Amino acid sequence: MTSGTTEQNGFPNESIETSGSNSGNLIEKLLTGIAFFMLGLAILPLGLVISYVIFKGLSRFNLALFTEIPPTAMQEGGGVASAIVGTILLVGLAAVISVPIGIGAGIYLSEFSSKKIAKWIRFATNVLSGVPSIIVGIFAYTVVVLTMDKFSTLAGGFALAILMLPIIVRTTDEALQLVPQEVRWASVGVGASSFHTVLQIVIPAAIPAILTGITLGVARAAGETAPLLFTVIFAQSWPDRIIDETVPSMSVLIYNFATAPYENQQEIAWAASLILILLVLFASILARYFGQKGTY
Image (cartoon, rainbow, N blue to C red; front, side, top):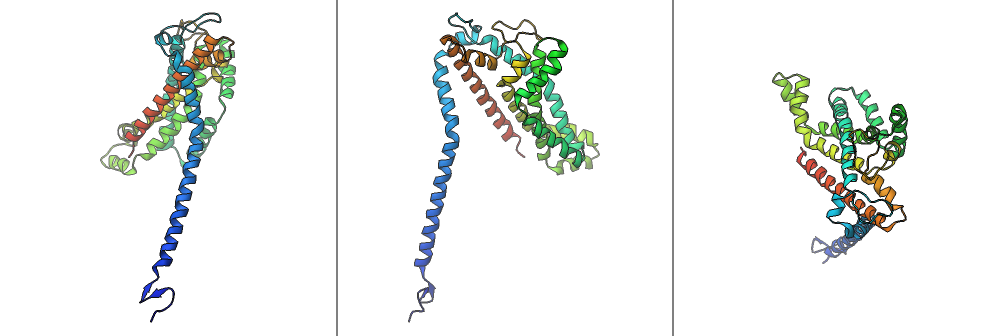
């Protein structure tokens, strides 16, 4: 004699469990499909932008692009060689300013500051990272350009350094916090001071992650335009001096040439855009490499 619909010969009815399992699998597949669809929508703009820039810029990829200076209005041909050198000069100057300050601030936050002070400094760093770049450009114009009474590479490097600084501070702070506390205890336990522990043990262990922050900061600074419009005068020619008034840069070249009425300059702008995208891609790969290497 059976014991009802839920049991048969003392065992649960398997049809009910199978029905519930099939319903759960169906909902899981539906939600997974929705998630993949949303992921595709999120990636679609990036794919469209990259594809269009490659389509427009690849036709001008040749040796002249990397060896000749930008063309004037009615000139044919030309390249972006001087703009590449100018960008390296500006970003290098920004790195010289921001990297020591950023790493030092990150070390102080992680290793020596009190929790209350660190909380407010981290908050200020997050606010600074969200300040629009054009505001940074106006600030650099007021502080450096008006003080020196001229546009200069120094003013441009100063503006880019401000944009790089919060990225380096935050990544250095987080990288040092990832180092296990037991490492510090072991160093102090064998007689090392806190200063020597941080300098010889903690920082070397966090270097890969710190390099990730520096790489990301360089990638952002290389693509900024607004600060340079307020601090440096653009020119097609090669930079004459390290601290020069007229310094070509990739981002300002793209801004000027993309809106020009001459087809040749527009093509140069697309090619320069592709170079910047490749630069950001390369920087992202480096950052990912250093980040994985620095995983504890």
